[in-house]
Length: 234
Length: 107
View 1 (cartoon, helix red, strand yellow):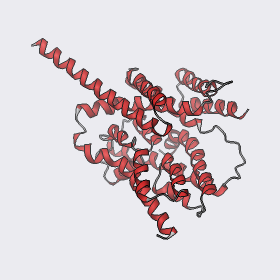
View 2 (cartoon, helix red, strand yellow):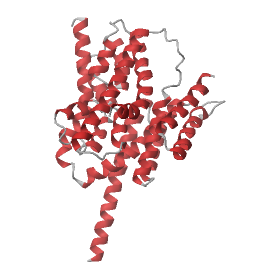
View 3 (tube, chains in turn brown, blue):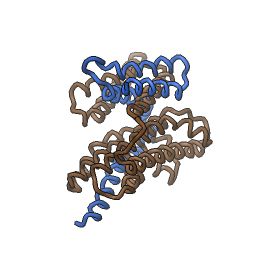
View 4 (cartoon, chains in turn orange, brown):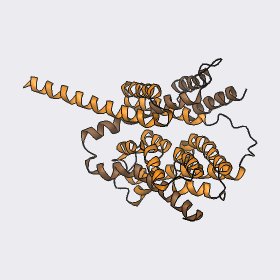
C-alpha cells in the first residue's frame, strides 16, 4: 500500500515541498519568529494560500476579526469541495474529521479522481494515507523554507509547475471517466470570465461560484425536460 | 495582548476559519447526500473545478507580454496534454511538463 500511496502522491510532493518552502522562506524573511512556527502552522492550519496570506497579516499585526474574515473568504472554495465527497467519507468515523481537516485543493483532486474498488473501510484508510502523505510534504516544505531562509542554492525556479501539470492530468482523467466534455468547457468558461472580470484574489472563488451556479442551472433544465417528456408521454 | 499570546490566538483563529470552510458541507448537507441535485454536483463539479484550476494557475504561470505571449507556460502545458493522451502515464506527463517549464523559465 505504501509504495502505491507514494506513487499516487508524488506529484503533490513536487508541488508541496517547493510551495511550502516558498511559504517558509517568506515567513523567515518577513517575520521575526522562531523557525519552528512555520512547520507548526503547516500542522495546525494546513492551507497554502491561507498561510501565505497569514504572513502578511502577521507582519501588519492585523486584528483577529479581520484575520478570521480574510481566511473565511480566501478559503470559501473549500465549501464546494466537500459536496463531491459527502458519500465517500460517510461512515469513516473519527477518520472523517482528519479527512475534512486535510481537504486542500490538491488532496481534493486526488481523492475525487482516484479509482475506488475496495470496501469502504479500505478506501477510507487509503484516503487518510493520501491526506497524511500530502500534509507531511507540506510541513516538510514549511520547515525547509524557514530553516534555509534566503540561502536557497538549488535553482528550483519553475518546479511549482508540477501542480499545474497535475491538474491537467486530473482534468484529462475526469474527462475520460465521465465521457463528456461539457463540465470541462463550463469550468474553462468560468475561469475565463473570472480572469477577465475579477481581481486575482477573487478569481478562484469567483470561478467556482460561477461553475456551481451553471451546474445547478443545467440540473434544473435537465429535470424540466425530463418532466415535460414524461408529461407528453402520458 | 502579549506577543506570544497574539501569535497563539492568530494561529488558532486561522486554523479555525480554515477548518470551518472545509467542514461546512459535511455539517449541513450530509443527510441529503442521496439527493439527485447533490449527486449531480458531486459527479460533474470535480471535472469543472479541475479545468478552472488549470486555466487560472496556467494564467499565473505564464508571462503574457512580448516575447513569450504566454507560450512559456502554454508550451509545457501542451506537452503534458499530448503526452498524457498518448501514453496515459501520469508521472511521466507531469515530470516532462515540469522539466520543460523549468528549462524555459531558467534560460
